[in-house]
Length: 552
Image 1 (cartoon, one colour):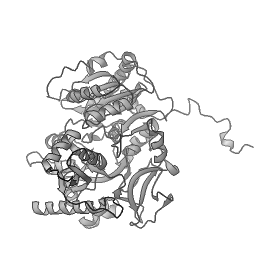
Image 2 (cartoon, rainbow, N blue to C red):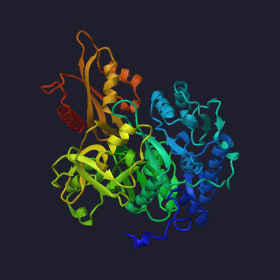
Image 3 (cartoon, rainbow, N blue to C red):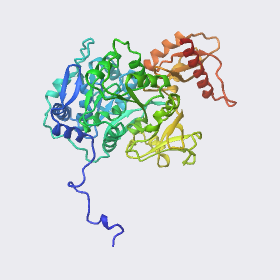
């Protein structure tokens, strides 16, 4: 008798095993609900049948006109537009790997990503073509260049010498026999993290993980069939947290939003009967602070999901009054976006507002498709006590953890040491099993949903001839969640003021990474000379409180 008789003569075959991929969600939606509205963008209304056909055309055109196949990289520099949604399906349907680029990056960083990912095709929104051209001038690769001309963009014309996106699609076959992954472990996307030191790392995600997290989104957020989702979250962030694939699974409607502004947000919420949206606290502030003439009455409570710094208590109260139910999520690029949710207990709603705000600030418990989540001592790899006080590192295990870092075996091995993914985030775990972040071991500042490396900002400041010592920490900000605050010691005999350093940083960094405050003061150090960043964080908090008090 074999050790496990159920494994005898019961092998995988095409009848009982297919690789998991979120691409099948779109095929099913188009076959079952072909006429249901899949995409809304300005005056455009596109059905699932058309969405599926155009995605297949894109896959066909990439394969036949550009020679794209399995394992090749197709990069995109796009806003939240129909083209970006088509790329989330059409690119992997060709067998290629989708590389979505943050449109707020500087040209040097974009060039690095294009080279590191070995990009063969670059699809660019007309608005970002100047950035793309500058990056290509710095890059070693020379990808085929395709320009998407969004009718909702009213900016200047460009003569980029690129192939027109619509013309490119017209050469593709809408009935193209698109490629399933050979293995569900095959890569579907590569997304670059904000590096804390050196260059950013390329996080490789697979079809299986994208399939599972996309479904996990629907279950976690209680998205009913035909939900309407407003794109306030950039799709370049972790592939829009997998929501481009989630919406096809539930035959929902994508409402694209090119720019995150109060008036179109409120118009979409009311006119399109939006049910769900995601964003950083800055998006909530934008919604709440809109003029009364812009705000609209909502027919139902709208679900809002945030995964940045915990929203202030007043902001949560204002959102509730305005008709939004806010849920806190947590995750990383390495976990396909959020894989932790602050699952709300019904009886918590009866507690005082201040206590509710404290509970909402916790990151929470694991998503259904995440197998394990814990706070461990990184030295012993044992769980810390569930006392809400003992610090440890937040770690993940499961099918929604990345394959690894592209072309970086050393970083991959380090990230998976001990059989867990090390997040680098420090936190505690409460007696009820809910985790709460307390610090970031990599000194990442989360501002408006964007990751900012304090070390990167410090390195830029150190390049200024007047700067002897620079230390950058997060300062709490009601609008953005956090903003960089720079503490400076000037070199002997040198002079510089805040305006000088601000301008310097603007020339060195993406605009959102430029510190809001520059404080010229002695920087506290330990006896061994290490900068005491915890003391600087407390000082930054005091300054933020003082500013808030003066404003009120």
